[in-house]
Image 1: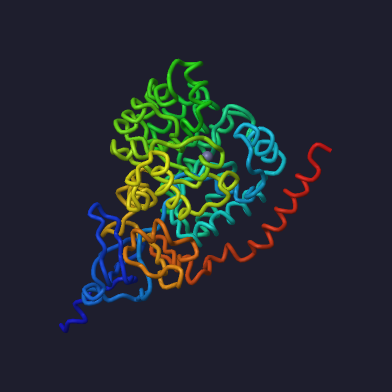
Image 2: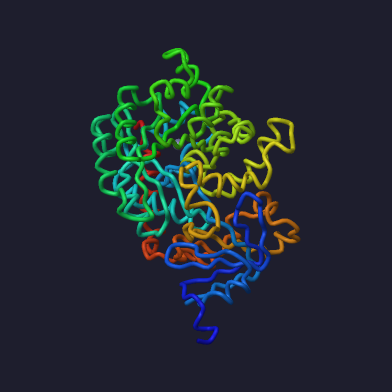
Length: 451
Ligand SMILES: [Zn+2]
């Protein structure tokens, strides 16, 4: 047998001038490559060595590129992309009660969800997000479209104690949530169904316990909002004598795998509980800044060893779903808040959008790193543009210099879904027209409300 025949046949070898696997040693492999078969990574190493060991059907070149794991958006509401720039610069309760809730009640239907979800996915794929964790109405439509767009997701039907688009109240929302779990569990490798009770202040303890029981019985992750505002914590203390984290912990809520968005207003004891109970804390810096919710104690959470991920929140409070901005802000705002330039480093901020973010969404065993056996979710970032020069340290550029524009290729489960700034899945073909149609409806409602 000659040497060529001994090579192991695989699907793809993808290269990069710099390969950052996002491992614990912060390794940088120069002239690196990843070998992929099916939807999984089979080897990571120097390009020459992989080319010698494997016979790939396709080789994706890596000149001028950095190869890193795809970004993970740990908390968003993707269909809200259609509310981008809809209501800005308002206090949280005014923004919610006078703008978002009435608009949702009037405008959110199946067509809105379709166009809004696709717009959100388009932005995610163009900016290198390969996995997102979502909570929004009509999640079944979003799930179906996420499958067609080829993007990995953890999706949940929101459960809430009052009427909301598509549901009459908690009982119906919980029935929809259970049906959604039954339909999607183990059905599609890209889609992980989760339970999504909105928050401890919009769902009663009895109802949260019913969700918890279902989650434990069926091994389902719970995604919720916790301790977003000082007001929420004050109300929780008034009603229960406990912080939101203490209250939820008092009835075993964290026995389930929980993804907790925000975690802004925390006591020292809450941070200890987050570590002990393996709560995935999702930091949403843009949303917290824009709604003046406060600063999450990210530095302290990281010091305690809590898995902290990053999220964009919905585009209504951001106004995008671009994870580069979240990484950038995370690497800056904690330094300013703590008057400590070492508070959250570039590497830590990037890890929160990749390897540590994967742990925060309870998928650290298969996502967030370029590693043999992990899912083939990765992006190539082009560092050759004039405004990216010079580059001495890829980690520094990834946190402080690059924007979504530098993402040249997005691959999810071994499939290229965005290349050279073009979206490849056919589901995006008519999106521009669909958005115009929906935007006209939103504008009409804005102009005629109260008349
Ligand atoms: Zn949210």
